[in-house]
Picture 1 (spheres, one colour):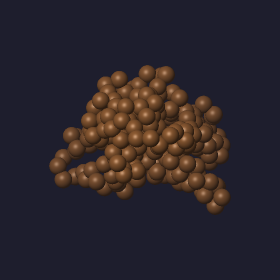
Picture 2: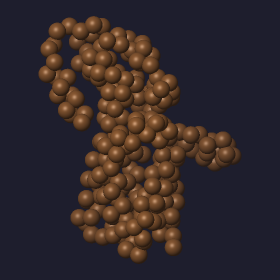
Picture 3: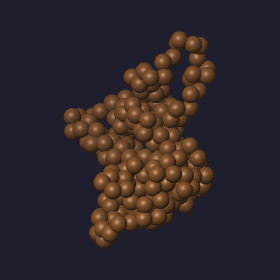
Length: 226
C-alpha cells in the first residue's frame, strides 16, 4: 500500500509545489516523523495538519500534495514502520522453523524483538506510543491499519504457537497471542509505570535486555499455562 502511494507520488508532475523546500529530498519522511510524534501524543482527532506543517516548516498544501488527506498521512505514517515490523517477524519465525521445532520462548522472543529495537530512538518510541494509541482510535481508523500491517504475521504466530503447544485449543491460542500483544504494547510504550512503582535505584528504564527478558518470561508462562 505504501509502495503504491509512493509510486503514485513519483508519477506526479515535478512542478514547484506550494511551500516546497528546495533540495530537501527526504521531506516526506520529515513530515511523517512530525506526524508520528503528533499522532502519538494527541491521537488522530486531536492532531491537525496545521500543527504538523508548522513542526516541519512547510505548508498544509505540501502535506496534501504528498499524502492527499490527514487519514492518508496517518495511514502512511503507521504502515511505514508497521509493515517493517511485520516483515521482520515473519523472517525471524521462518528462520526458527527452518532450524527445527522452536520453543515457545523462542517464538515469543522473535515476535517481540523487532518492536523492542524501536525503543533505541526517539522516533521509534513515538511509533510505539502511536501503535498503543491506535487501539483507542475508532474502528474505522484502527481496524484496517492494524489488519493491513499485522494480520498476516500475527496469524503466522498463532499457527506457530499451536505447533509448539499442540494440546492448546485453537481459541486459547488466539486469546494468548492477543494477550501477548497487549502486554508488549503496555510494556514497550513508555507508560513510566515502573518508574512510579519501583523504589529508586532498583529499576533501569534503559535496560532493554531486562525488559524483553521480563516480558518474554511472563508471556511464555501464560502460553504454557494449563
